[in-house]
Picture 1 (cartoon, rainbow, N blue to C red):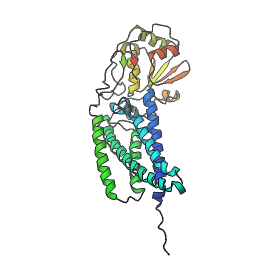
Picture 2 (cartoon, rainbow, N blue to C red; picture 1 turned 60 degrees about the vertical axis):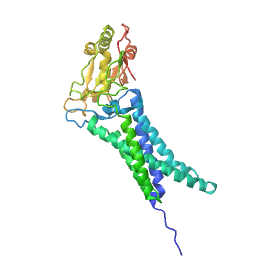
Picture 3 (spheres, rainbow, N blue to C red; picture 1 turned 180 degrees about the vertical axis):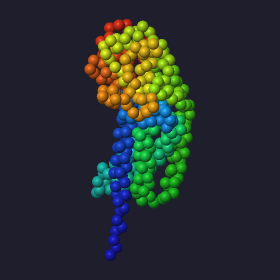
Picture 4 (tube, rainbow, N blue to C red; picture 1 turned 90 degrees about the horizontal axis):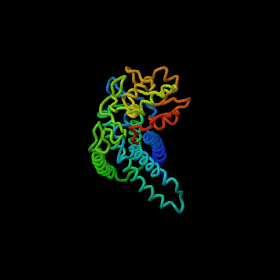
Length: 333
């Protein structure tokens, strides 16, 4: 009697495993997309690779590499993971019988898409890991997790089916890898740690769009380069009078956005607490823990909490400020 050779378990469950990993990747990149678009801080304060500094996830999100074609890089990552999820589960939605031949064709087609997609994502993630540790010099768990997701999907795609032509894998890997690498280098050709041609590190027409050119000074942060007007100073004093409080971290770029909105003179009047010790940027001071601070900047005004850098108009509104409102600067989103 001839026994039918059993299908290896990895071949039976590879698509489900790829779908599960793609779902995790979509959740991570979807979260980072929301954080980037909202201007808030990610829940992460991983330390920088450079001694005495802190960058972590939020400095990565504020870096010029985090924006592609004017959109958050995380958004493209979300679309890539969602595409991999669709390719993984599409054939599973078709049953046998009349759809058997159609399912076979769809399986072959989607396996090729999975191979191309996972190779592209792995090459791109490898480049970003190089940038992360050599240029930004930060540790970002979200970024590392995404790179591992891409690599794992590639491994599962290769071992998850019985490829009839192994040479097809190598040929596809070489072509797709080269195209992805050339495209990646082209997209980031003008990027430096200080900014890009599309997003210069400067204040233009009153718009604030801060991109760090250098590491912040421990315990101090970056220099406030904007000047204050009468309205900014009046608002800062009003916030002080009503007992408002801002919680910041000296290494936080969005906190520096808030400082730039007020200007050098007015920010001296702003009631604020720096939650990050100068010698341990990953730690949080006790008063900030007691206040339940989870991201920076966070405002406490009249018993309510506001997270992320706030426009001065919004601070004036929620604080009941009735003074001059001819503020000089605004946030460029």
